[in-house]
Length: 222
Ligand SMILES: O=C(O)CCC(=O)C(=O)O
Ligand SMILES: [Fe+2]
Image (cartoon, rainbow, N blue to C red):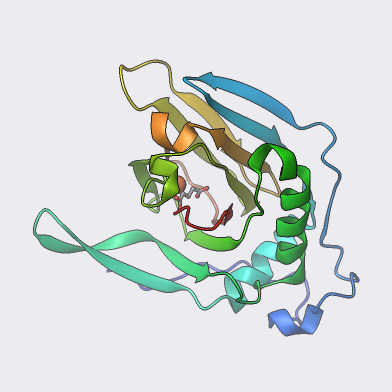
């Protein structure tokens, strides 16, 4: 069992709780425009929007979230034994205050930007903390909820060090798409992506720093 959580030293020694920065904007953490977003058509009705560096001050937000979010370690049954989930988790269901005001602003901005195409707002937040290259998420689609039957979107804002997000078609093989995500990058999986494609953050033997993924989903998508 791993007990250490690698925290980067904060850029501001005096700031060690999220509340210290409740958002008057003086912390330099802010969203950029959606200009420069590019859509990658994956196929089978799936697509991936990519906007590098959408969030400015992303390393600072990493420090605040790493220190201030009530992270939970989970264990799940697998092959008839309990195994540690190889990442830390946090959930912010509808109605729960986001862990930093800029995360709420991101949800509003994404909801406005995709209003017509998505037809509903992003509502829930899920956070994953990948402490090092041993942390990962295996191949899957977000198919517990409506993503199993309907087109939908899952938007992911990444802070901290880049990791590779891999995508591959669910059936019939095909090339793997590799998208590095870190330091304020935004990716949005859309269309049939959760149903017809799979995604993963693979383990890596390379020395990599920690990354936090912030996922935005509509109601009933999980
Ligand atoms: O870390 C990521 O960006 C992906 C997380 C993910 O796929 C999930 O939580 O469903
Ligand atoms: Fe996922």
